[in-house]
Length: 480
Image (cartoon, rainbow, N blue to C red; front, side):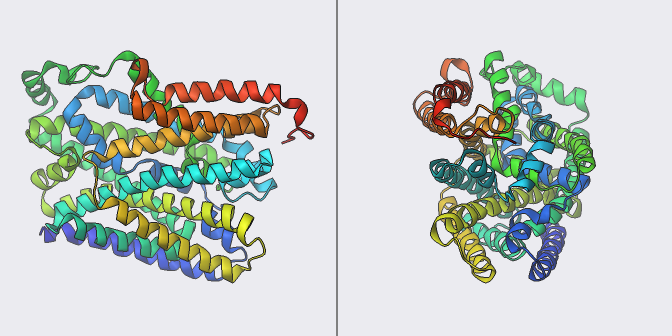
């Protein structure tokens, strides 16, 4: 057990718990439990908004799975990963002011609140809740696996024991603190993520004898490690360009990211968040994936991709510094887990329970239900994470594609096209989800394109066609 490494991590976790208890005390004096617990009272400034978006987007796949794939694939995966650079820019510029204004106008606390107000359709609400629950459950499972594997690498405790430790740590502070705890800890976690990335990248370059020596070692092993097509030449230009849909513009359709665009305080903060967030995401995505590639020259022969980053850190850094660096993936994992946990909980409580089961529930009942649902979801995810996949990044990216196939056009066209109606939105969601799952299951990267490409294109065409064909059936057009 690496005690000198664990101590800085323990200090980091204690700090997070303190923030959670502070946020819980704040909730006790809240005038609106729902708005504060699930949206932080819409009070985030520019720095906090940038950090919470970056910390939510940067997850186990960025710090654990991504470097593992880069270790196996080469610099081509670094190029692919950099498609994520403008993700925060796209979300805040396209959703930004209009989404926040409309969310306030209709007192929307969740993404489904917006969809309900926009399309006036119970079917869309229920289908949206189902999609969020299923795909974010998969994404949360990936984060739980990443956290458990990190603790396993540090402590020598079994995977199952590590999973239990991680689960308790996350559930305690998310359940008691809600969105306020999530946003505040994201600020600290985002800063730790950037710091850890920079320290480890510098250390790997020094350990490898400089960039030139590292590149020479990679070329000696396999020249394709330094090509844009990957070690096995599987990264074709068509695949790379369509992968950009998944981790670039398609991010607008991720509910856990979109909800951030309705939680900031003022437009000046949003503009500041675009700059800070883009720099932060660029630093992390470039740095961590480059670490994965360079790590192959420093420590060859790591068989399990998800252990590349922890192994490099423990082998080449002094123990205390390793603890600080390993707080970065822990921060990334925990920040994503808490955001997803709050989002799924808000979907079930606000969008299902209060809409269809008990609309007249009082504040005390809502509070009890929120805590209970969040707890049950967290425990359920633990059950699914007991048998983890070999590379958790694929589980996370599967969830990304499913959510984008369902929500990208329902959100964007719902905001900017008055002709969009509930029939078009519902048809688009159904076609998008069904085609995505079918192609993913039976065809993989159909025609050499990423799996999400065809569902996103088809769902757009279906949305427009059905909306135009049914415009006479909609009595009152949307007026934003």
